[in-house]
Amino acid sequence: MPRPRNKQDMLLAAQEGYDKLFAFINEMTDKEMNTPFDFSDDPQKSEAHWQRDKNLRDVLIHLYEWQRLLLRFVEKNYTSAGGIVFPFLPEPYNWKTYGDMNRVLWQQHQQTTLDEATSMLADSHRKVLALAESFSNEQLFTKKFYRWTGTSDLGSYFVSTLSSHYDWALKKLKAHRKKVM
Image (tube, helix red, strand yellow):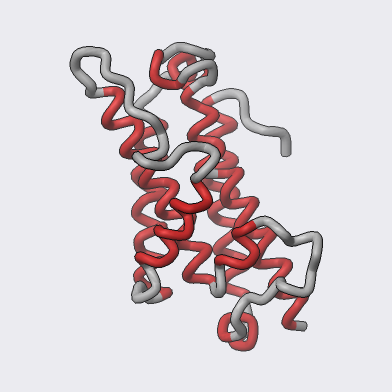
């Protein structure tokens, strides 16, 4: 499916991605659920996230935390008085160091249970969809509509945090399944 370029397609892709992800999760075997992720022997999986996430909980928490980033980004900027622009990534992180932030987020949730992670993601998914619904197509998909989105459009933040991230998670879970089989 091509990257959504309007509100209707974005919302549809987000829900379809979420549903597809959880359909896959619900089909995971006990072995798949209980075997730690290990991609260390695959040179094509060299990005940090392949080594960071060790189980399904870690993947779900990653999705949840990025949705929280989006919720905060929009809330802070949309309600900002005085034209102060807040970055998407919290200080001290930037797009060169966000991997470090991901690692900190991962560490913060090592005591979070899978059930908690599932519930937290379901809640953030609902909140992000509701937030997206509150914007018009023009507000979401007009580049530079908001000063705080820079040269991009607000919709691209939603797409990245929802459907694109769900695709990323599903790809990781499928790769894990192949290793476990």
